[in-house]
Length: 198
Image (cartoon, rainbow, N blue to C red; front, side):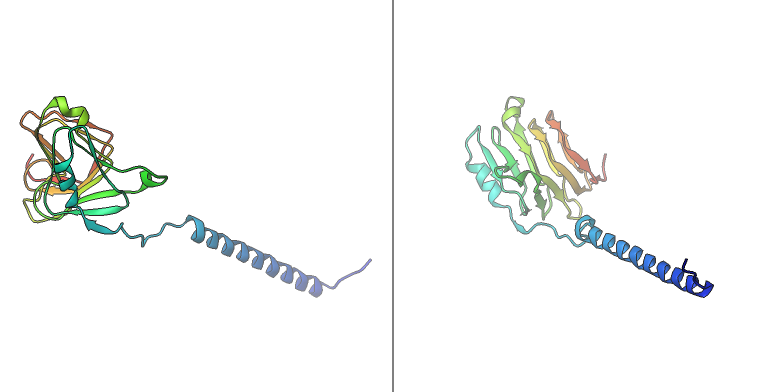
């Protein structure tokens, strides 16, 4: 039987421990690389490109009753004048190709007033006057700014939107309904909106 001195045994144990530590370091390093490559969030992710959204009102104005104005996703639409809905005309985010449903479509007001205004839309047009699929926001801080959506004697359908970051020193930060308005409001995310008057 081969016998080894105590010093040789100690040296061998030290070498084995170092090898084991290197293996662990490599394993941890690989784990960090995997997380960085596949699991980490991009903290520097930018918002979508910004374009003018003033063409939307032109399309609404020329649309016939019962039709829909579709807005392509993946962009921020800068709105300089409030979008005014018409009875029987819907405004929706376009979802026509794979992946469109996941892309945001942001309507952002750059001046005073609400992002979207519904005026004198009877309940009989509720099923054909739809606002759907948008992120609606109004970051202007100088009061009075405006609501995300304002309904004045109007009863549209408002569904599947995110209404956030709307500020006003009047009433209704997110959605403001008055004067016999009775809209259908379903499946919306309405958060972080502020109004000075209640």
